[in-house]
Image 1 (spheres, rainbow, N blue to C red):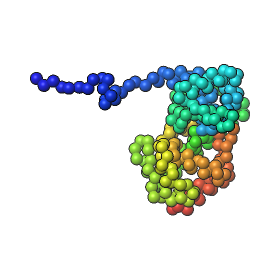
Image 2: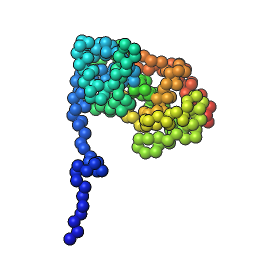
Image 3: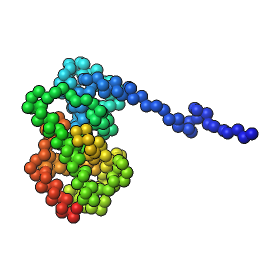
Image 4: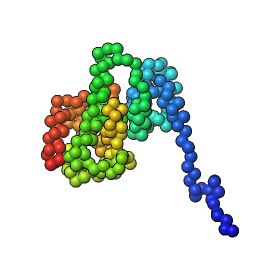
Length: 245
């Protein structure tokens, strides 16, 4: 009788899959003040502790405790600039997780003022999801790039840049080799929580969003909101048309 040989469970040559401790992350995100802090950082910018305390509605001392827990949990990181310390999300994956959770979350408290209604409507129209365009305009941008054959979808998530897409980036003075050299996904579906359809996440949409801001097609609102200027639609139309897209 032949006896099969197996590696011992502790053998370093064999990587044993392990369950992820989802509950630990859920506890970090689930606390209201910490959730407010993460939401405040979801636009990709780094903010000081004092501003995050105000956004979360807690004292500076309480915010310091929450920030330490979020840093220890790997959800945010600290950036030192001289004597000042700023906090930011630990990366695009954290922002993607927050966006995904928003799809499952119930609606917040009922809108009670015209200002709240305007703010919510503005977020649904255009906002930053970490460093890329989200909301209706983000979903629309992905659709137009696919329709123009600037992007080709490889699978359910990832996209390939075509020759037309390369021309489009060149026309915006975006350095494609630098984008491809980044250690992050290039162009991946990110399900938009307000539109329930995907916008693009990754190095490509981040570069496009930054360029649209430089050109003045988009401007920043308070928080995550982005304002679409009068130049946005004509600029997008002319950009796509000029490359033969």
